[in-house]
Length: 421
Image 1: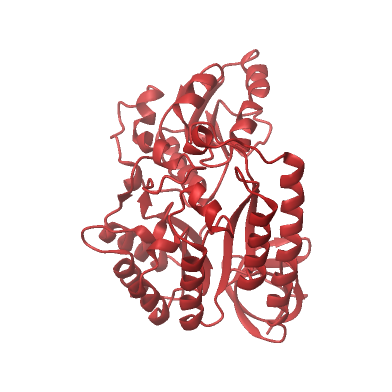
Image 2: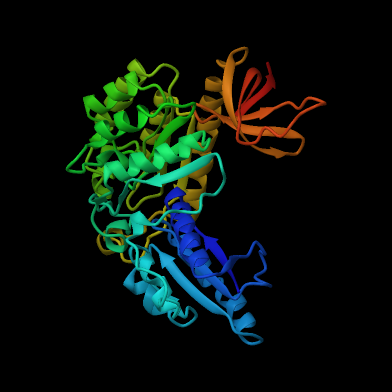
């Protein structure tokens, strides 16, 4: 029997999918790669935590599911970030709905529990997406209660994974040749286990010998203590890439979102990191058209983009996520047309500043982790998370999963063109 994973959302959801794959494999199911669900006996949907649009897309699956169920047995499962309100509406076309924290109970839900022991979510060994990059959750849940997000309600309060377990997993991966380890958490730098805080955990992982990179996402401005920054400065394997969500360039909007920091605080954190991490690239998350966002508020976000010189930004047009405090406290009072305009204008500024940043790298040599081959080019990432297209040579071997040295020959708005050296 086969199952199909349908994943919405971020890296945390992809990590969920890797653990789901482990549990399904233990029960003897095979993974389907068929996009049309033609050979799948089970469809497992992993829901997104923030965007209502992603939840709406799940409703869009109902017709496909119903069509299959009319002609053959077909089981549908929903997990990830699912609110009680979502469950009530989706019970009509999902046979099983469970909290991702209860993943270890899935065999029981599928009546396959006789030979399998229930496992705690963070202890489930994932089936990694490939053999050179790994996503490792170090926390689950969140304590922040941002008004646009449901994570505290769907995944609970923060729980910190044992640091010895994390380091052991990282060591195993490095020993078998993994080149990139990404530590995951809703607010990854708030990690504070009784055995180690985030700074100490980074030091423990960084001490593992080998040729590999360490990344971590997603960080929160309030948890970048001086000891974390100092550890980053001294680290051997920590990469010069910072993803730090700001969400808005205006303090009034931040307060309305319950982000618990000021723009001044955000700028101070970035300045401290840029001072000690040479060449660090900075990306962020932004919501345009949040409840009550005026043109003046938006212009402050535009100004922030120019001042901070972001290398990348993930811009979302606000939509109320049902079940959040944002839905209860604020009206969605910015028109969709206005959100589209602001999104387009902000992307133009981002394209301009990101292109300027990339032009500074032309002529420089870089170490690139090759990820794939696409449209005649080898594609990969620099240590600063820049997307790099590498011009092919006639006698190329398969470089996927390897570090290669390149020279940057051209700057593009969203990446770099390089040749091997």
